[in-house]
Figure (cartoon, each protein chain N blue to C red):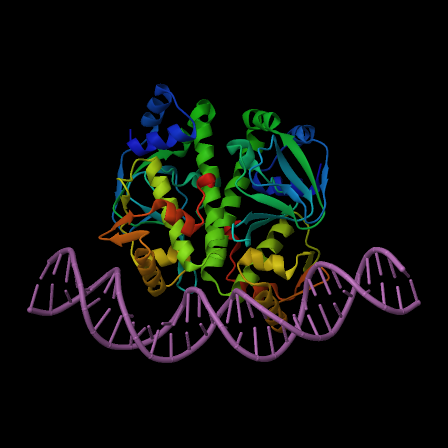
Length: 232
Length: 232
DNA sequence: CGTCGTCTTGACCAAAGTCAACGCACGTGG
DNA sequence: CCACGTGCGTTGACTTTGGTCAAGACGACG
């Protein structure tokens, strides 16, 4: 069983040995996706739900004018498309930002879990609701905060979520994302992201080098980003 | 039974007479909320879920610096806080933008419905997932679209959702929202909203007067707002 | 060693914000 | 019934934030 998934679910609703055994049985063979490839695409009608076990994926929407907006980052342990189970057709795409590994759960198997394993079901619904909370927070971030706060906030969120699944190592974590992509996540141009990153570094809050993000002043970063993890 | 709720659920997953009877029995006494009052507040731990039967409410988050972001509009027929059922504590507030009427369903009653009435349950989960899709679209809207498109897009969305619950009358619907509030929804200053509204009017797309929004060119508005209802 | 993608920098530009004043409609109280 | 206050919409002048464009540096990799 993927370790991240374990930590994640334990936090949402403690599960029994038996629950985990059930999950393990329901998970299909690992699928690998190369960086910059789509995991799923807008318009797809998947027949499975996917669990991200390794890597970083970006959920995004492509606009007609060519721009794109990343609407969330997904980290290991995330059930990455519960909507496909309920809604069928996807309204957005998900792209691998790094090489990824995912494991599917067929929709029937998912139905079975929801029907017969209430503890897992509750954990899953909690996850869905928290995802929604994350989207709301992103609306706030992009809608109201200036560039500096905006970036600080995203870093806090990702760090916090990675900590839950034990993917933070000390004050640093793997975050091999270009400034272009960062810009697409926070609604800024790559150039502006660049300048703001320099300010964040000058203020001894974070540095981003060689695909790893190091947080030098966690408290300061939270303050700068107006970050409160209550929504997570 | 509230008519909007009926139309809404029929669209999400057709229900039987019996399902509706169950719902009707589960709904508590109507609660009235005056305009500008909060329906629920951040930090609350409600013991009921609420169905909006009349009026318009804005889901919002207040920032420490005093600004606020409206993250969605809720229209009649909406189950307005399913998260309270799953998560307990609210991460945001909901304010009545107009006088509102709401009917509660206690959490135990909700549990009962989800356990024993799979058709209703499915409709509800679809609604939850569509809400999430709306949040995603708002991230896109606020993150990538210029002011003019942004406003056009929100108008399209609200119109579309009101149409579903039969609250559009011809090309117009009640939308008694100040330009200040509109700005809080799309991440613009009230002054800028004002100027853009004038352009929208000059372009014969919409007019907003006396609390009603009239759409003069539905096709044009959709194009201007880069609106595609696939996510709803 | 050269190429490609990303980061960096500078000069300039445009969208949207801010501030302040004024108009207008509505409601309240004298 | 009028005078005034209040909230909202409107306008203008000015500022700021962030966008765009273009060029150069840097670094990984074939």
